[in-house]
Length: 363
Length: 220
Image (tube, rainbow over all chains, first blue to last red):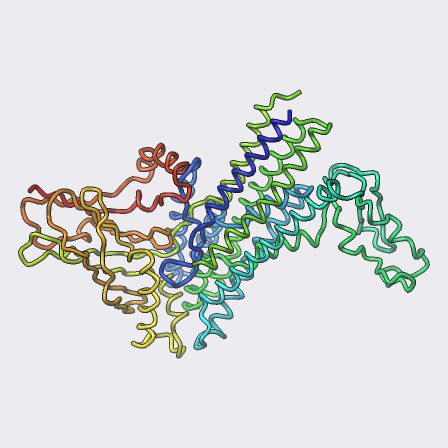
């Protein structure tokens, strides 16, 4: 049975390696103008599928570009433009990009309800669209005539995004590995790090006046009484004078939470602050030709398409994980498979960020 | 007990999915209608230079305009165009100016062009340059000229076969423009691609397989 775990671990390591190598590519563009969407590696086991996706991406992008040009003469093409942007978003996300890798890995590494995962996919895609629009408005109204070029701005955001992804991955990995380290070297009682395992230290703390915010604590160090230790005799939402704790759960207390908004927002921000170059190019043409509505709606439609693909892929990843855990059963094996997959997911985010970052900085 | 092969298969499926999410192909964001002129030596016996003309699409051209229009007059004057040329010139150096020339399958080293010229015509960026082989290429055997962006950022399109031209080709040579069909190319290269992946995981780039090529076959 151990061999099974070993194999699962090896497979994940192989995937991580593949990702790492795939990332060794030039993130800035070959023309020196604009940024490429990274990773032109196209060999390997999935070459055929990827080639098909690539073909569809090209077709939809060309059609989109053609419609954009036609919009100058014929404003009635708006709906065609929106439809094509949506299709482009779907195919675009199926190909390159760090978004779905980060979101999927994050969901694999954490016990995130699928519904919330899907919501995250949408928020991050939407944020990406908003970033693209903001960068282009800035480029159009502020940066023009200055020494700062749009390529610089986009590149800066790209690096920032990859730094975030790397840091986020490192933090996720540390959170998953810390209990193992403690168990190996420390005296703390062993407990499952997986949120699916209801540990003995698990308790529910419902904050006063904020019944909606539920902090599920399965962290033995965090006292379940923390939220209550200063009593209930003060107004909801105020800071308790005795202990200085706000009655909104401290994020640190939520580290074992099945759903931790702070972590989720980090994932969303890490993904969302890097505008995609397709969106930037479409917007620059739109703004220069006065097609304000068309440009903005096109980019928003793209983000909806992107979100759908990312959500589907993330769902597949989580479903695969659940199956693996389910087949391994409830016993120690199940726990181990669970732990290995979660650590693998966290490791993937970290390696992925590192690979992208090193590629960008080397370019 | 569950057989470990089953777990392995599941793990592989998951690994595959996650690997796919990273190892993906970028797609061109920039399109250029290209023309290649193969310039022969005065005696028509060897290749002296390759002359390139790329007319970029209006969407990318508008990005260039927005980025390089320092004086905000929505036009690119000579100084601004020179900036564009310099940027492209220095960036292309890393990618052999998108050229791949082989004689009987062996790579031929091409010198860097002395300069890159740019122009803006009808809302489109135009780039011109000329590159010479390190030593003149004798017109013998099979000579292939490919023009493509190995990073997949730019699609260099030769819309018509006539856009890959050779002036004064001797009758001993035949000229052919090869346009690989993506599906066939992949099918033919599936095994090589898979092998290549394991032998050299940094990858052979697929743009090479897809690139439109000009092939000259000359009898001695």
